[in-house]
Length: 318
Image (cartoon, rainbow, N blue to C red; front, top):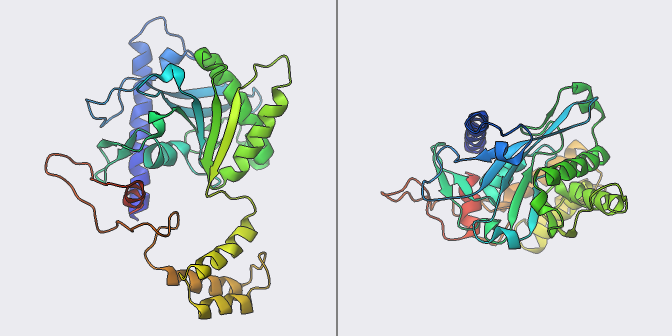
């Protein structure tokens, strides 16, 4: 329930920020829609006044038949952005918001405080090393949408890769100073599918002389989903070898599960029982302290004090 409330608070922040964008455009006559200056975020609601960042959010529109609009949030590095690489961040799911989760719970410049109104600086933000581009992908995730909803019936990983490539080409047209910049694709979970397929698409399309080449330097996948059934089966082997589940629980899985693709009720029950042995640990870092009982609010700040990245992760998952 707490996680749902936090995600709702992130969405509220995002909605307010989006509603502010037309006012920004109206305040600057002559800035046409589709120009990056029309996408400038002067400040997010609840943003600490002392934090000055160059931020943008908006839509890249394409596909006349489906009328797709992919939403992005872009934050430039606060120090020397012209000499830092561009990183595209993708969350997985499928269906997880790169804006709500990636930007505001993981690697972006801010975290949302538990009261849902205050943004707290993230001391572990990747903006220290790169310019961060968060993409809501595939279409239908987060604020990204298609006017022709029939497109949702034919979605798949291939379409996601093609759409993301089209998005990037048009985004580079909007931000031409980033053309040719060292470019990395990073993400987690089901982005284990999105990232390699987008990388292959870029590699293939870079050979098209009619298209602007993208200077892809590398990819990185954390906690990636590549072969879901096999990975779920191996999860219990991993936990058993590290004494997070008992020998009896491990033996029960071996007895009732006939293979990684076994979806029987008895197999799933054995796995669920085994997983309940793990207790209060972070599935993303099993050896890290849980930090669940260390929420501290200093009298001069509404932002929680955490001293490790894992503490931040667990705090926002409460």
